[in-house]
Image: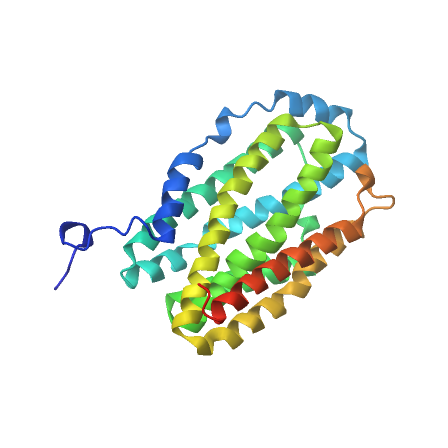
Length: 283
């Protein structure tokens, strides 16, 4: 077999590339341990909440926990696809994805175990819209890469994972956490964990934008697939938000549905504008 190792030839690593710069950030900011976060005050705060307040926090946490577990389970084909193309710097950064997503699963599991304690079957919060994204679209798009590593398949996988799951749903979920926890000055350990999670996810989103921009620049014909996947999944994504608000009357903590729908739409538009610029050659 003919092989060439970049780091033992004159090529070396491209340390100025976006993936390597993100890898440096991951090494600096991504090495945190969920077990180091003190949740004792969170447990005390939890006991003081009303039943509806507890249920809303549990609802939000459940959507995150299942989502983090889903991407941990489904992510590997994307890493394998990039590795098969010999994109070493991108693969090096992608190794941090799986580690970080697994840590997110660990963090939310600690919250459920140490703060909530006994709880009902949490899949009751997984509505049809949620299932469309996490039970169907995510494993389908990423799983397709096992047999089809075409630019179109990569586009659909990255849009689903990076642009919809992370850039729309997760970002809106963080906004909900901050609105509730900061406004009411509760659950300090959870707040600390969410800060770490959002930093991790911001790097994932940045890579997704890089990957999609690279694919669109090299293969302009994949734009229709990108736009189609974004539009297909946007409605169920915002549907997840509407489903959550439909469960409560009145809504705990004074949350207003339009604030979060507007936020999700803004996140979607922000990413589409960035990708449109890549399509026009502004990579």
